[in-house]
Image (cartoon, rainbow over all chains, first blue to last red; front, side, top):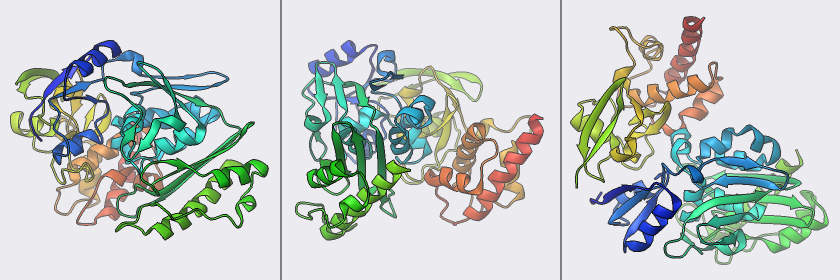
Length: 265
Length: 159
């Protein structure tokens, strides 16, 4: 790892100011992706701004409308939260499927969303539930947030502070893990709201995306049978040493059905 | 640029100079001579470097030394007291849960975090929990046996 300056920010304002002022500073949340990437010299920041001491970025608040989760809330905290387990079980379920216990003890919601790894779990749940990502500057709907492989709508000097998850009537998240890495080869989140059903896919493409024909079919009838005859397109899906595009497209259909079955349990 | 890092290490207040990019595992091994935490992979997968920070297990190869400022760090070296092995260490010894021993400190620190959360884990729960700890001797069977035996021993000790 190349040398950098370490700075522990005291507030969101302090962190944002520091981030804007520096040409090559990066934010450090849990570090579960960033630190391994720095070891591989995939990035060479001049400074890491640690968010660990910022109290306003932590915590889980629940009301009738939804859950507000602070950006540096760890996966373990989301997975173990009793209120979330009751109100939006798909969220702690997804958090529990990330990495291993030690990664879940450090990794954070905001870090995962801002990183937007094409195989990450949280982006699928955020997009599936239609979450709102709150930054230090504005509110961004999940539909506009994930813009490409490891890319988001976050601008310079902008950071995720909170995430608002609406409460669905029912939801499920099913993943087919890569047998070696345990990352989602394909993961599908299905969420039913009064206004309709949302279906989001991770692992299969360059970035998380929605499947509109699946959504329409499930809005008409929320059952596995409603997906009969529907197949996901393999066009522009990832095709690599782990799986071909056709196989991933097939898995999208299987995982969508499993997610529906989970939602109906 | 070096900066001072102060934290509690196995019950003692300590401080050390560390650069921004110094990893916690390197500070523990090179500065404090605590070589129980091993570096097995450099990709945060193997778990040989697991220590506890503020009571929860973390991979010390994927945490900066500077991030330990003000925290409480516990390593495998802090488990035994007065020459007596901790029940998890004792169970690993009794059940032959180590072959080459490289993964053992991480396995024990990870297992201890599990047992503090779930005092009587099932075999499946132990195997799930140890997902982030690899044993390249593939001695998982006896490791799982040892963790479950340690659970019983710790229960009896507590009662």
